Image 1 (cartoon, rainbow, N blue to C red):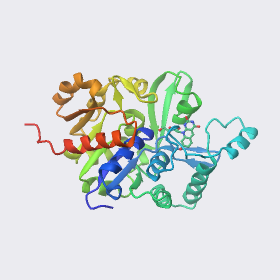
Image 2 (cartoon, rainbow, N blue to C red):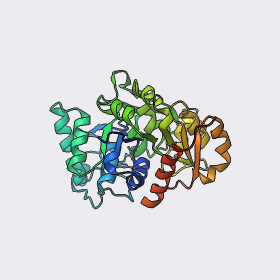
Image 3 (cartoon, rainbow, N blue to C red):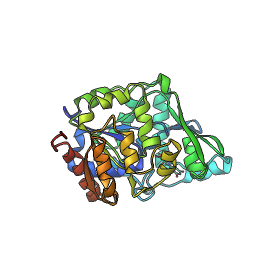
Image 4 (cartoon, protein in one colour):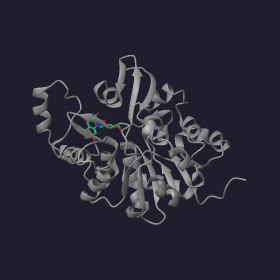
Amino acid sequence: MASRPVVVLAGGVGAARFLRGLVRAVPPDDIVVIGNTGDDMWWHGLYIAPDLDTVTYWLAGVADEARGWGIRGDTFTAQAALATLTDASWFQLGDRDLATHLYRTGRLTSSAPLHTVTAELAEQLGVRSRILPMCDEPVETRLKTDAGDLHFQEYFVRERYRPRVREIYWTGLDAARPAPGVAEALSASRAVLIAPSNPSISIGPILRVPGMRELVAAVRDRTVAISPVIAGRAVKGPTVELLRAEGIRPDALGVAEVYRDVARGFVLDSADASLAPAIAALGYRIAVRPTMLDDGEAAREVARAALDILQQPAAA
Ligand code: FO1
């Protein structure tokens, strides 16, 4: 690990798109990613870690960037065969992606902790940044909806986030601890960036791991959050609906309120410039920029803006 890394709290595709820019602004070896594992699930005997894999594949340059998840050019032969055996085939695994899950599951069932296996997979794919799970223990994001009590992937993939969400909750948090390396990376960091991921179901679980929020709050003066909401809408997915379900104002100001105790800087989209005074009044140093991360160069600009905030003089 770099002696003073840039640490990123990350969900899935939003974080991956952001990281694609950060690696153009900062040497990749200087980056430590702390990834959400609340979306993880057991599927036909395999342990799937979608957000860790999404970040790994994007940083390795093998991601299917158009689809957002999985590996570019992957085939789905095993998936098609599975669909002939069972109706439980709504979660699709590509053939090459399957190799990741076979490897990870084999290592986990022979007692290797998740952080070790995550590092092995990243190294084997040539990723130079360090990728850490938020914790080694199983934590599950679940939603109480008008279609029943669902695992996150059942809500997101099987039900295509159509059910109305009444409550989001997590199992396994009591036994969870920040994974080995997390506390050290945060305390040694030169900057901590909260990626433009869903604050409730992507960053929320990370900050809910017992002790994590305190670790980030301790380095609040060098932490910057990037809003995932632009003009009251998410680029992709049910971010706005899930913020509402948690009673959070579904716009950049609502996101800024959520991170108030852990971040000092905030990047919001130019379309939300009218919210800037209210966000600054929460005590944030702010940058207003186009935050659509359509390509690596746009993402680099946002990453640069986030890091530059830390050079601004502290508010009086
Ligand atoms: N998302 C889908 O919408 N449909 C899928 O079949 C699907 C499979 C899948 C397999 C491996 C993986 O790592 C991710 C996968 N995703 C799929 C994405 C994933 O459900 C979500 O994007 C994340 O959990 C939210 O961050």
